[in-house]
Length: 351
Image (cartoon, rainbow, N blue to C red; front, side, top):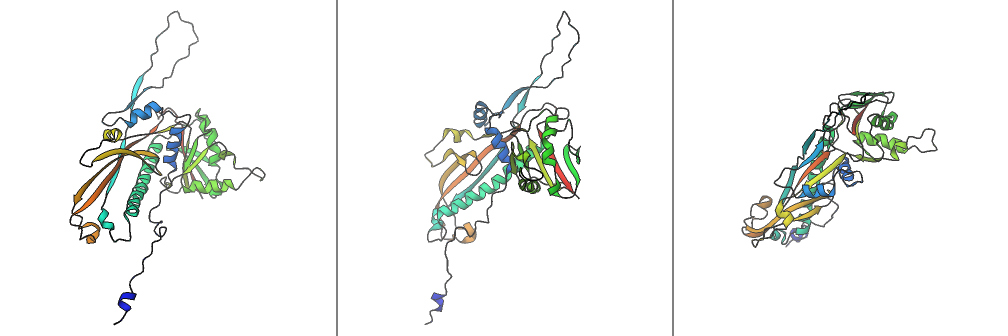
């Protein structure tokens, strides 16, 4: 009797890092900028506003504001003073719901090389990867919509302002770019200060900053000065327009804010005798306190995994769903067409 049939079985050995390239968290510099400014000293997101937003499910959250007005300075001293009332308004916070859930079948891992904890971790990680990409997309959309449409002065030899974007053009290559150095005076021409603010861009901007990092105070030309008082971040969700090689945003500190909320039962921590329960949990790598909903049930899982669980015609299952609402909020501007904002979008076009 030959031993080949028993000796030539496939070899299996766990290697946790072998499939680590399958799920990769994206570079999310814009989402991170919203989070940083939300938690910063200049933030307009007060603890009271954050708490009110977190528990606002089922209601419309509005923030009272007073609109800009242009006043007339007189050269006379009248006996009767005319009234000049402010115009108030409400800003409505718009939330977007993000949710994802999955099932766990404990008996599926009986005599299985993949244990239940590893299966849960991979499903959870896949959710984090997708949610991070989705959040970054929402953050970029909010940031781009709020970019300034007005600029007091465009500085720099090769910079122009068109279609609400400052463009540096006719340069040989990215290492010749000076756009980052020109952002401070352009921001100040709009009566904003970029000190302590954020500069976020795509990998083209990263190439520019890498070049700048190669200079120092003892080089013939010190290009590192713009780094000293700003936070730099990078995003894979900022795309270049045609012919552009780098794109980014300069953002005054205190301009961005992020609000989240969850469903009422998650806040109350509801638990039912049927195993259904709600609660909250902070999702790693997102920095967001999410609601969750879970329950147990007996199910037919014989068709799960393409029939690999045919023996599970009746088995126990655990279900969990994560859900939260998020709003990326930019400091109020009553008329973006005439009033500058603290966000400058810029790009670079090389020869």
